Length: 402
View 1 (cartoon, one colour):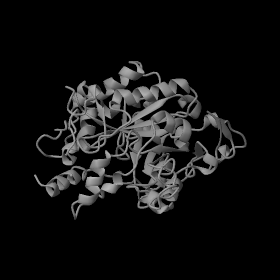
View 2 (cartoon, helix red, strand yellow):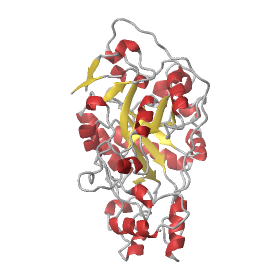
View 3 (cartoon, helix red, strand yellow):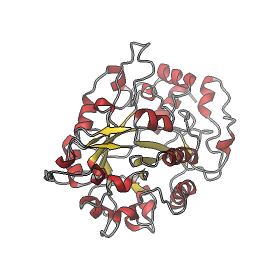
């Protein structure tokens, strides 16, 4: 394939508990000072020399997720408590399997929400089903086994293409093995601890240092102890003093060096970041990078999910050398309205990892007036484009294959 680079006790109380469970989220970091762009141009170049932070690709948000169990969703829509900050209709989206996202829609970054379940069975029951008079036992054997589970919110929003982290990782590796020349894949791993705080509902476990060791161990179980297909923090650091210095001083691998490789990047709370680096200063020796604040020794990736409010900040960070994640849409709003303003801001920000729920239009767009054909893609369905903020002029017009 040739790619051309162009530039829910009472129901109301349960509902409040549900939405309160989703209130916490990772805050965006503060920006650094402005950085002047590099406009160096040379007459000839090979696209394989392009640094991977000089690309821009499209990724998916909550990439594993299937639509909420319909009876629960309909109950939440009709009984949403007043005064809550979240609209249950924000859950009204669904995803294709990972191979389909990779093959048919050019997705090159994904997001997996994982929950710690060292003894197994913690998420085998789905108490939200009791709200609609259904059996709470899932009857799914895989949920009885120990290991990280992949889902959005226990008991209520549990539908997923991949029940376990191992399942999702296996899908990624199998696709990568079958497509060894692929652009680097970025696997974002969100460490989830939100739950619905009522008796009988899942008591979500924290990500302690031991739990985080288990995350790395599951990655190694799939990709091998040597992690030959994975670019780790230590790989990026190379001879630099830290991965931050590597990111800011041209240490990112070239396209040629990163083909067929995978990066893992954790979305973590402040305490989880401390736990993950316990015994591993600067992430050296760890498998995953983290989204962290600019300027810290452990920072190579950072994120600002709102490209409208943070356009200048994102551009500055991209120019500095960081890898940025932002989102083109949120809460299904753009797919309902057909508004591309946020998407356009996300793309022009230069963030290398641009996440969407709509790499294809909502499947109901052709049959329901509530949905539009909103979808995120590059012109001419390009797989990737030369980064509009820091892409060197010498690569304009060059082509690559995957």
